Image (cartoon, rainbow, N blue to C red; front, side, top):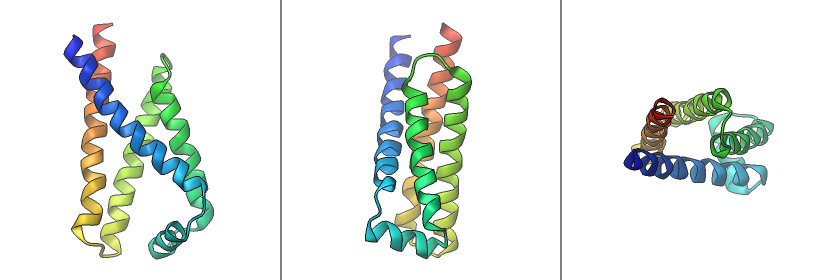
Amino acid sequence: MKTNKILYWTFTGIICALMLLSGVGGLFTTPAGVAMFKQLGYPLYFGKLLAIAKILGVIALLTPGFNRLKEWAYAGFAYDLIFVTYSFICINESVSNWVFPIVMLGVLALSYVYHQKRLRAA
């Protein structure tokens, strides 16, 4: 039981830190961010919307209770990581650029698995 809790908070902490940094970074327009969005073919306003969604998802994962909201946050993060991987593959980015989102998708999956174990134990 204690091991599950430690693993849950480890994986959840990693994914929340990643999404929070990405979300806060997305709120501010930087030349590198603008260049990446142009290269991917996305409109710049989409980055702000995505940033706000990431921050709200982190809040949902870290707030006790609200299990249905947590499910939505996990799904949103999974879509984000899958779409960014696919986008990088489509623009012929090197493997080193799109393997990180796949690894983070694995971390997200582990966080979700241990979240489910915590719910069953409660």
